[in-house]
Length: 136
Image 1 (cartoon, rainbow, N blue to C red):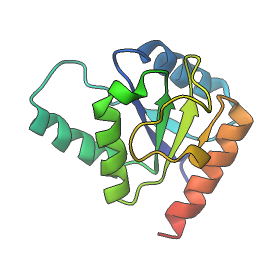
Image 2: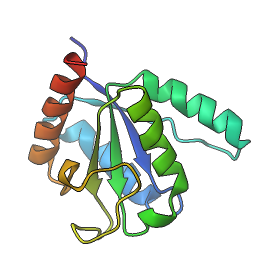
Image 3: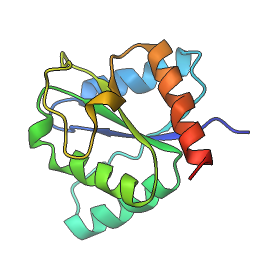
Image 4: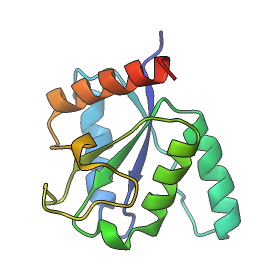
């Protein structure tokens, strides 16, 4: 079986650097998954963005939310989580950029599904997501 595919959701205004680092480090980790970088390269109408993102999320095995300190203002992240849940794509979060268990979470992301940026914990979460996906 091919490595699981992950859609990365993040706050473009505050955590683009962390997304780049996360994607880069994932290639060197022992965690078997592939990140699809489908970040919008330019601004587009909301309806077009929503259609494109929904289609892309549907082609993945899980959505990983990079949870930064300013998630309360990241409305696009909440929309991506909602789209994933509507399509029964499992979701979990990873704290980045100094965020921690006392940081705000985007709407729809559960605290018990949000973990530290630790590749062993991420590997365990991916295994859990793949088990959930098989059982859906």
